Length: 224
Image 1: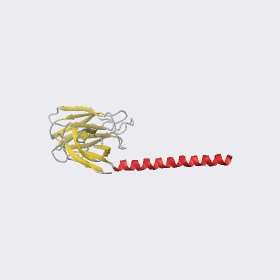
Image 2: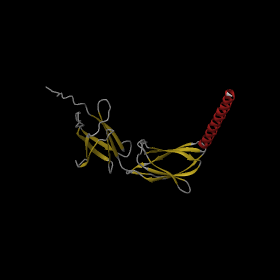
Image 3: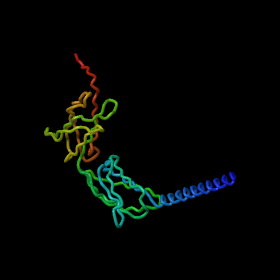
Image 4: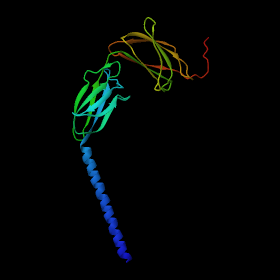
């Protein structure tokens, strides 16, 4: 009797394991089939100087509806995952301030398992300052106070660096400007140099520069 029960239990276990294995095999094949019928779209946004353009918004549309909407991240990239095979339009719905986008729509056809990268080139229509304030080890410093002047010594802006130690400003026109740090973050020594910025239509259309604040050790330097 015990042997008979053992045989029955063994048969049941084999049936259960076979059913599990079949289910796993079927689910795996189905998943592979589904994966083969989808693709991915990566959108890269940059300006004419190959710098990332952040903050734009896009819709992914087919003939009937909007499939997905996304906002461009800090790296200038948007990714649409698991896009079914077919034809789509990538449509710009919001353009960041200070830019133009010559071609706001792009037609795309996704094939099985395909990954498509689309690059959108924006035209920056105003010159820009990107200032980084950091310590001597290259670590970003937030809350550094910055002031900008034009050639007539008119104050254009007063602001602070963000969490990444960055302060940005969009100018209305190209030309010569001046920048000065007014306050250093707590524990650091201010660099109060008056910096001259020349922004033109070529390589300096976006002006990148860095200010270094030394750590405040409490020591005073004396000169004879």
